[in-house]
Length: 58
Figure 1 (tube, one colour):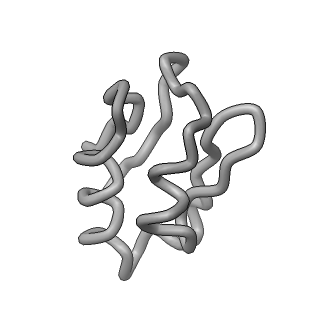
Figure 2: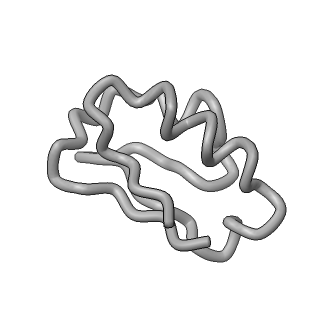
C-alpha cells in the first residue's frame, strides 16, 4: 500500500485521531511509512474522514 498526503492538507488532525500509528500532524500530515503494514484499515478510515481528501491511498 502506498500512502501520501497531498498539498491540500489543512493539518486538521482528523487522520491522526483515527490512525496515529501512521499519521502525525505538524504543519501538515506526515505519513510514517514504516507503520503502514498492519494499519491498512485505519489508513482507509483516515482517508475517508479527511475533509479535504488530502490522503491518497494506492
